Length: 414
Image (cartoon, rainbow, N blue to C red; front, side):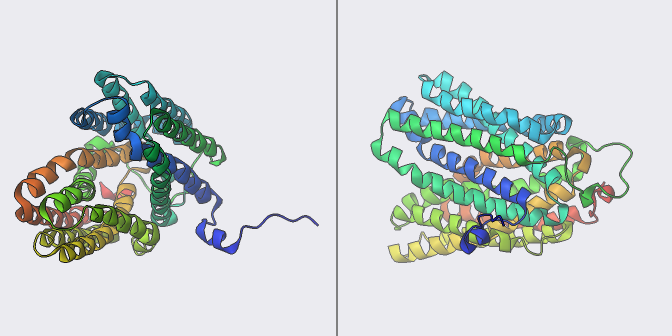
């Protein structure tokens, strides 16, 4: 009699039972551990080892972000032509080469050029991976699967960021380069895991039933573009978390600077633990739009709690900020779950790559302009700015259900 090794019960509970989803989860974990390593040390490497100014790094990253906005659609279209898995087997090694290239950067011009290339590859790969998931996993499990993958991604970022502490402690060129090499290895490892995925998609309910005679084009699909824009407004929440809160805590409240780290911990833990649970009940376009609307209200409440932190003692400020982070994170969970369903169910199933490219480009645009929006509202106008941001979130969330009204299966959506 032969026997096979069985993982301990605790490990089995953490891993998805479906072998395809398990492999996708492992790919996400490997990739995001590397990303967590690199993102944590990249700015310090560029300023302390390369010698760039903080302003120069910020400008270069902004320029790269703009380039990344335009990467999703062409990469998505290419994925529709040659296959998402095949394209990722090429993009992954290119990303590895790009990240190692930072070790050879010695000027601002070289940094900008490399950052633009790396960001185009990163944003394009995100769109292609989304198309791969859409074509690989059954439609009925898409939202829950993406929720699980997002939990894994956040766990990977936490692991990578924690591991980068050694490089930060050494604060040396060799230590930073070692992190880049590890990040490159993570890209190659994730690419190697692609070998276990099918080259063709599984049966998908989105591909059943009658379809229009002509394949829809994402850039001419007005409903899809509107949904993408509205959800991009909700994506401004990430700039609130990464830019608005740190500046607000330091400049306008009596809370200690350590509260910034506490906010990040609260956010990461909630996403890791509750993203799958938050996706329950999001099964179609109407429920997805309602989830986004509820999430938008929570984001607005979070903004008002952040604003309240400017009044009162340090203890009250910390309490208000952490309460805001809790509510904000719950809103993020709902808007993320709703966005996945909207991006898939409103797309032409014959052009998942292009449609996911458009949706990802909307998210990328929000991430580029987010710091500017936060600066013009929160930094320049304080509590009034928080109130404006809250109103923007509520308005976008309220319009989403109306914009999706009458949309169900893609065949009837346009």
